Each structure stands twice: as C-alpha cells, then as structure tokens.
Length: 191
Image (cartoon, helix red, strand yellow):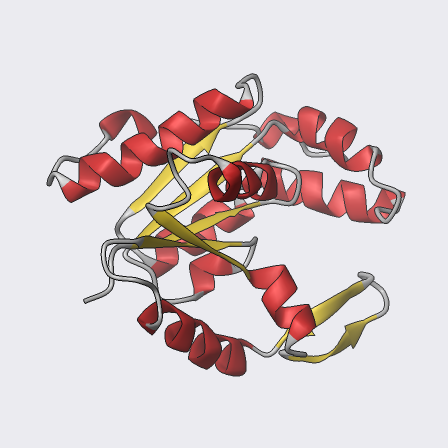
C-alpha cells in the first residue's frame, strides 16, 4: 500500500524546490518522504509535447506524465509518503494539495534574480499569484487543499508547516490555520 501522495504546488519562486531539496537531504525527513521532481522528470524522460517559445518553457504531456507518476508512486517504498513537487502537481492524482504562496512583490524580487526569467515571465508569474491562479485550480481539483504563505517565513518554518499539514491529516485532523481563503493579494496585480 502506498502512503499519502502530496502535491506541493505554487507559483514559481514560492519555495517548492528549496523545501524538497532540504527534505531529500535531511535525515529527519528523507526516509519519510519520496520526492518526485516533476520538472526534472518531464525533461529527463521527454514527457512534453513541444516548446512554448513565447513563454520560454516546455508543455508537459499531462497524460504521459500522469501515467509515469502513477508508476513511480506505486514503486514508493512502504511507509513512505510521496511529494509531487512542481507548479503543475495539482493536476496529478494526490491525496492532498499544499499550495505555497508568496506575495507578488516578494515573487518579483525572487524571480528577478533568476537569469532565465525575462521581465514578462516575472510579471506573468507575479500576476498569476496575485490572482490566486494555482490556488483556484487546486480548489477546483480537490477538497483537501491547504496554503502556506511563505513570504516572511524561513525555510525551516515552511518545512515544519508542510509536515504539520501532512501529519494532521494522517491523524484525521484538519489543520484549519492552513485552509485556503485567508490570503488576498489582488491589489498587487501590475497593470
């Protein structure tokens, strides 16, 4: 029997990769959670339909990705939970979706430091965050969605929040402080 499958999603720059890299390396977590890095999986196994030159990205082949992720989940060792890491993870089968959030102003600063991000790409992502795009998509997909505002949190606090959500749900409790709907950044949309 497979453990819990967690989709860790959010706009680029909210902390998904940093959280998962820490979990993979830290002795407290690496035996509890298997991380599936969706971007790496898509690129390594060429699970895309083509390249979007305008957005400077590849378009994931969601059907092939879903099949491959299902195979990997079935191979997860007994007693381990699986974290699907990526901004499209909420489209894949998961028991719970955790959306990492960050204020659009913070995202513009974080993404602006990435060489591969053009001004247009930074703006598109920060506006998507202000408009709750990934949160809305997640809520349309599942009734077990939680959000964490990572804007002013350090890495350890974000990890503890992710683990707290998972552990609470395993105990049959709903971690109400992480229920969606408390974050509103609509005033930070750039026009």
